[in-house]
Length: 353
Image (tube, rainbow, N blue to C red; front, side, top):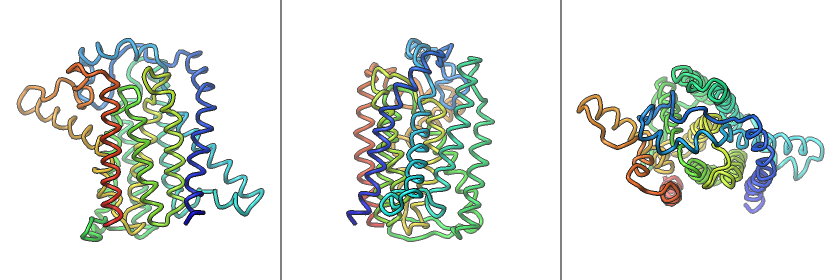
């Protein structure tokens, strides 16, 4: 047990340490190439805040002077740690081999999702900072997420023989072939929550705590490699957060939010029936701030379409709090607290099942 715990904690510490070292190098090049928005606003984003003067007024100064693409630090650090540990295991074997968390059974799919999301998001960010027209259009990003979700869902269904979802205190619910579209819908919903990346330190803290919780769930399921992956990712996120707390040195932007949301979807499903657990059912609890982000966006759109008026000043709701006059750091820290509490509650349910 203690040895397995070390296999999870060590990648977390290594990722955090390497991320802290690499962050100044990344920010140097981002500032050198002026990798920030040329005009404030959400452009082709998914939130109701798209094109709203109120949102632009709240964020116009920071958005046009703070570099994007900070998410490179997260998936880049995880990739580097995974590669180094794999090479050390090949060269020296024994203890180093035990730290290698990349394997086909548990971490290939989440790692691929992380990298695919990172590179697609990076292309979006590149268009944003060079053309200044909102980056890759939303329909193309949704298409990429749908394709990845379909591939991963089919892999779970056909290769891993997973066709059900676990429910707490009930057990697996058989979905049959409908498991694949369900997988896609969950993946799209999690991706939609990526618009939470809008206030200094907010997304970093929320995602860091969420992946820590899933690392604990995977560890309890004895999926040690998956736990190590989630912990490594959490360590990289906290290294990013070190430089993203107010005032942010850089923003996560699409290359970070897409990478993390897709990796989270795969991690949640990997801790579900595949790990004899309920990883998907507890996702709305553990990732409560993400769920609220998607819900408030949907409610805002519904209210505008049906009642012809806004339900919130700005959606998602964390920007509504800003519009009410809350300092951004207060919104961020309260979201952190909520995420920690929700994570503990979700972890308890996952362990009780």
